[in-house]
Length: 347
Image (cartoon, rainbow, N blue to C red; front, side):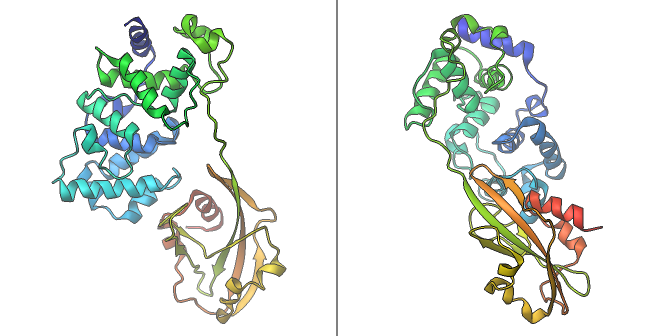
Protein backbone atom coordinates (compact mmCIF):
# COMPACT_ATOMS: atom_id res chain seq x y z
CA UNK A 1 0.00 0.00 0.00
CA UNK A 2 1.40 3.38 -1.02
CA UNK A 3 0.42 5.03 2.30
CA UNK A 4 2.40 2.51 4.33
CA UNK A 5 5.39 2.68 2.00
CA UNK A 6 5.47 6.46 2.38
CA UNK A 7 5.46 6.10 6.16
CA UNK A 8 8.23 3.51 6.22
CA UNK A 9 10.39 5.51 3.80
CA UNK A 10 10.01 8.53 6.07
CA UNK A 11 10.96 6.40 9.08
CA UNK A 12 14.15 5.14 7.46
CA UNK A 13 15.24 8.74 6.87
CA UNK A 14 14.16 10.23 10.19
CA UNK A 15 14.24 7.61 12.92
CA UNK A 16 16.09 8.52 16.08
CA UNK A 17 18.83 6.34 17.53
CA UNK A 18 17.68 5.07 20.93
CA UNK A 19 19.36 2.26 22.91
CA UNK A 20 16.15 0.22 23.13
CA UNK A 21 15.94 0.17 19.33
CA UNK A 22 19.13 -1.89 19.26
CA UNK A 23 17.53 -4.72 21.20
CA UNK A 24 14.64 -7.14 20.99
CA UNK A 25 15.07 -8.25 24.58
CA UNK A 26 11.51 -8.03 25.96
CA UNK A 27 12.82 -6.98 29.39
CA UNK A 28 14.55 -3.94 27.91
CA UNK A 29 11.64 -3.05 25.63
CA UNK A 30 9.18 -3.40 28.53
CA UNK A 31 11.37 -1.21 30.73
CA UNK A 32 11.61 1.49 28.05
CA UNK A 33 7.87 1.43 27.39
CA UNK A 34 6.97 1.76 31.07
CA UNK A 35 9.42 4.62 31.57
CA UNK A 36 8.20 6.44 28.46
CA UNK A 37 4.55 6.29 29.45
CA UNK A 38 3.60 9.93 30.05
CA UNK A 39 7.30 10.90 29.97
CA UNK A 40 9.30 12.70 27.28
CA UNK A 41 12.17 10.74 25.74
CA UNK A 42 14.77 13.30 26.82
CA UNK A 43 13.67 12.93 30.42
CA UNK A 44 13.20 9.17 30.33
CA UNK A 45 16.47 8.16 28.67
CA UNK A 46 18.74 8.75 31.71
CA UNK A 47 16.31 6.76 33.88
CA UNK A 48 16.35 3.89 31.38
CA UNK A 49 20.15 3.79 31.48
CA UNK A 50 20.22 4.04 35.28
CA UNK A 51 17.72 1.20 35.68
CA UNK A 52 19.70 -1.07 33.36
CA UNK A 53 22.89 -0.24 35.21
CA UNK A 54 21.30 -1.18 38.53
CA UNK A 55 19.04 -3.96 37.25
CA UNK A 56 20.61 -5.47 34.10
CA UNK A 57 18.18 -8.40 34.19
CA UNK A 58 14.68 -8.97 35.39
CA UNK A 59 16.11 -11.13 38.16
CA UNK A 60 18.03 -8.13 39.49
CA UNK A 61 14.90 -5.97 39.42
CA UNK A 62 12.85 -8.64 41.18
CA UNK A 63 15.48 -8.99 43.92
CA UNK A 64 15.57 -5.25 44.66
CA UNK A 65 13.63 -3.59 47.44
CA UNK A 66 10.70 -1.43 46.47
CA UNK A 67 12.37 1.45 48.27
CA UNK A 68 15.40 1.25 45.96
CA UNK A 69 13.19 1.06 42.87
CA UNK A 70 11.22 4.11 43.98
CA UNK A 71 14.41 6.03 44.79
CA UNK A 72 15.78 5.42 41.27
CA UNK A 73 12.39 6.42 39.84
CA UNK A 74 12.37 9.66 41.85
CA UNK A 75 11.52 12.62 39.63
CA UNK A 76 9.70 10.67 36.89
CA UNK A 77 6.28 10.97 38.49
CA UNK A 78 3.35 8.56 38.18
CA UNK A 79 5.01 6.34 40.76
CA UNK A 80 2.48 3.56 40.31
CA UNK A 81 4.48 2.71 37.19
CA UNK A 82 7.52 1.90 39.34
CA UNK A 83 5.51 -0.14 41.83
CA UNK A 84 3.84 -2.09 39.03
CA UNK A 85 7.18 -2.60 37.27
CA UNK A 86 8.65 -4.09 40.43
CA UNK A 87 5.61 -6.25 41.15
CA UNK A 88 5.58 -7.58 37.58
CA UNK A 89 9.29 -8.42 37.71
CA UNK A 90 8.70 -10.46 40.85
CA UNK A 91 5.76 -12.22 39.21
CA UNK A 92 7.81 -13.16 36.13
CA UNK A 93 10.68 -14.44 38.28
CA UNK A 94 8.64 -16.21 40.96
CA UNK A 95 5.72 -17.55 38.91
CA UNK A 96 7.27 -17.95 35.45
CA UNK A 97 10.86 -18.86 36.38
CA UNK A 98 12.07 -15.66 34.76
CA UNK A 99 10.56 -16.42 31.36
CA UNK A 100 9.11 -13.17 30.03
CA UNK A 101 5.64 -13.37 28.39
CA UNK A 102 5.94 -13.58 24.61
CA UNK A 103 2.39 -13.04 23.36
CA UNK A 104 0.02 -10.08 23.52
CA UNK A 105 -2.42 -12.07 25.64
CA UNK A 106 0.21 -13.07 28.19
CA UNK A 107 1.77 -9.61 28.26
CA UNK A 108 -1.59 -8.20 29.31
CA UNK A 109 -1.20 -10.17 32.55
CA UNK A 110 1.68 -7.94 33.65
CA UNK A 111 0.61 -5.43 36.26
CA UNK A 112 0.43 -1.94 34.80
CA UNK A 113 0.48 -3.19 31.19
CA UNK A 114 -2.45 -2.28 28.97
CA UNK A 115 -3.25 -2.70 25.30
CA UNK A 116 -0.70 -0.14 24.11
CA UNK A 117 2.30 -1.50 26.03
CA UNK A 118 1.41 -5.13 25.32
CA UNK A 119 1.04 -4.31 21.62
CA UNK A 120 4.39 -2.53 21.56
CA UNK A 121 6.30 -5.39 23.21
CA UNK A 122 4.51 -8.09 21.21
CA UNK A 123 5.19 -6.38 17.89
CA UNK A 124 8.74 -5.16 18.56
CA UNK A 125 10.06 -8.33 20.18
CA UNK A 126 7.93 -11.05 18.61
CA UNK A 127 6.56 -9.50 15.38
CA UNK A 128 3.00 -10.15 16.51
CA UNK A 129 0.65 -8.02 14.35
CA UNK A 130 -0.74 -5.86 17.16
CA UNK A 131 -1.09 -2.21 16.22
CA UNK A 132 -0.15 0.29 18.89
CA UNK A 133 -2.53 3.15 19.61
CA UNK A 134 -1.22 6.06 21.65
CA UNK A 135 -1.59 9.83 21.47
CA UNK A 136 0.74 10.02 18.49
CA UNK A 137 -1.28 7.45 16.54
CA UNK A 138 -4.62 9.03 17.44
CA UNK A 139 -3.36 12.40 16.24
CA UNK A 140 -1.78 11.19 12.99
CA UNK A 141 -4.67 9.00 11.86
CA UNK A 142 -7.43 11.40 12.88
CA UNK A 143 -5.77 14.24 10.95
CA UNK A 144 -4.94 12.30 7.82
CA UNK A 145 -8.30 10.56 7.50
CA UNK A 146 -10.35 13.38 9.05
CA UNK A 147 -11.75 11.06 11.72
CA UNK A 148 -14.31 13.02 13.72
CA UNK A 149 -14.89 10.34 16.33
CA UNK A 150 -13.72 11.74 19.70
CA UNK A 151 -10.69 9.81 20.88
CA UNK A 152 -12.21 9.57 24.37
CA UNK A 153 -15.42 7.98 23.04
CA UNK A 154 -16.13 4.44 24.21
CA UNK A 155 -15.40 2.75 20.88
CA UNK A 156 -12.53 4.99 19.79
CA UNK A 157 -9.64 2.74 20.77
CA UNK A 158 -11.08 -0.25 18.94
CA UNK A 159 -11.82 1.84 15.85
CA UNK A 160 -8.33 3.38 15.68
CA UNK A 161 -6.64 0.04 16.35
CA UNK A 162 -8.54 -1.59 13.51
CA UNK A 163 -7.64 1.31 11.23
CA UNK A 164 -3.95 1.02 12.13
CA UNK A 165 -4.02 -2.77 11.77
CA UNK A 166 -5.44 -2.47 8.23
CA UNK A 167 -2.50 -0.23 7.28
CA UNK A 168 0.01 -2.65 8.79
CA UNK A 169 -0.79 -5.53 6.45
CA UNK A 170 2.18 -7.01 4.62
CA UNK A 171 4.93 -5.24 6.57
CA UNK A 172 6.88 -5.84 9.78
CA UNK A 173 4.67 -5.03 12.80
CA UNK A 174 7.81 -3.91 14.65
CA UNK A 175 8.86 -1.41 12.00
CA UNK A 176 5.32 -0.22 11.29
CA UNK A 177 4.49 0.53 14.92
CA UNK A 178 7.74 2.33 15.59
CA UNK A 179 7.27 4.36 12.41
CA UNK A 180 3.76 5.37 13.46
CA UNK A 181 4.90 6.50 16.90
CA UNK A 182 7.95 8.29 15.50
CA UNK A 183 5.91 10.12 12.88
CA UNK A 184 3.55 11.45 15.54
CA UNK A 185 6.44 12.41 17.80
CA UNK A 186 8.53 14.22 15.18
CA UNK A 187 6.32 15.22 12.27
CA UNK A 188 2.62 15.22 13.11
CA UNK A 189 3.10 16.92 16.47
CA UNK A 190 0.42 18.39 18.76
CA UNK A 191 1.04 22.07 17.99
CA UNK A 192 4.17 22.83 16.00
CA UNK A 193 3.15 20.78 12.98
CA UNK A 194 5.39 21.33 9.94
CA UNK A 195 2.70 20.39 7.46
CA UNK A 196 4.51 21.81 4.41
CA UNK A 197 7.30 19.25 4.92
CA UNK A 198 4.95 16.33 5.53
CA UNK A 199 4.99 13.53 2.90
CA UNK A 200 1.25 13.06 3.44
CA UNK A 201 0.26 16.70 3.03
CA UNK A 202 -1.42 16.35 -0.36
CA UNK A 203 -3.94 13.82 0.93
CA UNK A 204 -4.31 14.90 4.55
CA UNK A 205 -7.95 15.84 5.14
CA UNK A 206 -7.19 17.99 8.20
CA UNK A 207 -4.65 20.03 6.22
CA UNK A 208 -6.83 20.38 3.14
CA UNK A 209 -9.74 21.59 5.27
CA UNK A 210 -7.61 23.87 7.45
CA UNK A 211 -8.44 21.84 10.57
CA UNK A 212 -5.04 20.56 11.66
CA UNK A 213 -5.49 22.07 15.13
CA UNK A 214 -8.99 20.61 15.44
CA UNK A 215 -7.86 16.99 15.38
CA UNK A 216 -7.83 14.78 17.32
CA UNK A 217 -11.25 15.60 18.74
CA UNK A 218 -11.71 15.14 22.48
CA UNK A 219 -14.94 15.86 24.32
CA UNK A 220 -14.08 15.49 27.98
CA UNK A 221 -12.26 18.27 29.77
CA UNK A 222 -9.85 17.47 32.57
CA UNK A 223 -11.07 18.87 35.88
CA UNK A 224 -8.21 20.25 37.94
CA UNK A 225 -8.40 20.06 41.73
CA UNK A 226 -6.53 22.46 44.02
CA UNK A 227 -5.01 20.95 47.18
CA UNK A 228 -3.23 22.69 50.05
CA UNK A 229 -0.34 20.92 51.81
CA UNK A 230 1.38 22.02 55.00
CA UNK A 231 4.59 20.12 55.78
CA UNK A 232 5.96 20.03 59.35
CA UNK A 233 9.74 20.18 58.99
CA UNK A 234 10.99 19.28 62.44
CA UNK A 235 14.45 20.03 63.80
CA UNK A 236 15.35 18.14 66.99
CA UNK A 237 18.21 18.89 69.44
CA UNK A 238 20.35 16.28 67.61
CA UNK A 239 19.65 17.97 64.27
CA UNK A 240 17.30 15.23 63.11
CA UNK A 241 13.90 15.40 61.45
CA UNK A 242 10.76 13.32 60.95
CA UNK A 243 9.27 11.70 57.85
CA UNK A 244 6.32 9.41 57.19
CA UNK A 245 5.56 6.98 54.39
CA UNK A 246 2.42 7.66 52.38
CA UNK A 247 0.29 4.52 52.54
CA UNK A 248 -2.97 5.64 50.98
CA UNK A 249 -3.58 5.10 47.30
CA UNK A 250 -3.28 8.18 45.15
CA UNK A 251 -0.33 10.44 44.49
CA UNK A 252 3.07 9.41 45.86
CA UNK A 253 1.99 6.10 47.40
CA UNK A 254 4.85 4.50 49.40
CA UNK A 255 7.06 7.58 49.03
CA UNK A 256 8.28 9.46 52.10
CA UNK A 257 7.37 12.98 53.16
CA UNK A 258 7.44 15.24 56.19
CA UNK A 259 4.37 15.01 58.48
CA UNK A 260 1.55 16.51 56.45
CA UNK A 261 -1.48 18.60 57.29
CA UNK A 262 -3.78 19.02 54.31
CA UNK A 263 -6.20 21.93 54.55
CA UNK A 264 -9.01 23.31 52.41
CA UNK A 265 -7.10 26.55 51.77
CA UNK A 266 -3.78 28.23 52.51
CA UNK A 267 -3.58 28.88 56.24
CA UNK A 268 -1.66 31.30 58.45
CA UNK A 269 0.61 30.49 61.37
CA UNK A 270 -2.19 31.63 63.69
CA UNK A 271 -4.53 28.96 62.28
CA UNK A 272 -1.82 26.31 62.06
CA UNK A 273 -0.79 26.37 65.70
CA UNK A 274 -4.42 25.88 66.79
CA UNK A 275 -4.94 22.81 64.62
CA UNK A 276 -5.17 19.40 66.40
CA UNK A 277 -2.60 17.90 64.00
CA UNK A 278 -0.11 20.52 65.15
CA UNK A 279 -1.03 20.36 68.84
CA UNK A 280 -0.29 16.61 69.01
CA UNK A 281 3.44 17.48 68.70
CA UNK A 282 3.43 19.83 71.72
CA UNK A 283 4.62 17.00 73.99
CA UNK A 284 8.04 17.32 72.36
CA UNK A 285 8.32 20.94 73.50
CA UNK A 286 7.76 23.15 70.48
CA UNK A 287 10.10 26.12 70.71
CA UNK A 288 9.31 27.83 67.43
CA UNK A 289 7.24 27.48 64.28
CA UNK A 290 7.96 29.62 61.25
CA UNK A 291 7.03 29.41 57.61
CA UNK A 292 10.12 28.73 55.48
CA UNK A 293 9.04 30.35 52.20
CA UNK A 294 6.86 33.49 52.23
CA UNK A 295 4.93 32.25 49.19
CA UNK A 296 3.41 28.79 48.78
CA UNK A 297 5.13 26.55 46.24
CA UNK A 298 2.83 25.56 43.40
CA UNK A 299 3.42 22.00 42.17
CA UNK A 300 1.46 21.01 39.09
CA UNK A 301 0.30 17.43 38.51
CA UNK A 302 -1.91 16.18 35.69
CA UNK A 303 -5.23 16.59 37.49
CA UNK A 304 -4.13 18.44 40.59
CA UNK A 305 -2.43 21.67 41.56
CA UNK A 306 -0.69 21.47 44.92
CA UNK A 307 0.00 24.59 46.96
CA UNK A 308 2.69 23.67 49.46
CA UNK A 309 3.82 25.48 52.61
CA UNK A 310 6.83 24.27 54.59
CA UNK A 311 6.87 25.04 58.32
CA UNK A 312 10.14 24.90 60.25
CA UNK A 313 9.39 23.56 63.73
CA UNK A 314 12.09 23.39 66.41
CA UNK A 315 11.49 21.11 69.42
CA UNK A 316 13.23 20.74 72.79
CA UNK A 317 13.03 16.95 73.02
CA UNK A 318 14.00 14.15 70.69
CA UNK A 319 11.19 12.56 68.68
CA UNK A 320 11.50 8.74 68.77
CA UNK A 321 10.94 8.22 65.02
CA UNK A 322 13.30 11.00 63.93
CA UNK A 323 16.09 10.32 61.42
CA UNK A 324 19.36 12.02 60.51
CA UNK A 325 19.81 14.03 57.33
CA UNK A 326 21.90 11.36 55.58
CA UNK A 327 19.08 8.85 55.98
CA UNK A 328 16.59 11.46 54.81
CA UNK A 329 18.50 11.98 51.56
CA UNK A 330 18.55 8.24 50.83
CA UNK A 331 14.76 7.85 50.99
CA UNK A 332 12.50 8.02 47.92
CA UNK A 333 10.51 11.26 48.08
CA UNK A 334 8.32 13.28 45.66
CA UNK A 335 10.37 15.56 43.41
CA UNK A 336 9.05 18.72 45.07
CA UNK A 337 10.41 17.45 48.39
CA UNK A 338 13.66 16.33 46.76
CA UNK A 339 14.24 19.93 45.66
CA UNK A 340 13.44 21.21 49.15
CA UNK A 341 15.78 18.71 50.80
CA UNK A 342 18.63 19.42 48.39
CA UNK A 343 18.29 23.12 49.08
CA UNK A 344 17.95 22.98 52.85
CA UNK A 345 20.03 20.03 54.04
CA UNK A 346 23.79 19.67 53.70
CA UNK A 347 25.40 16.28 53.24
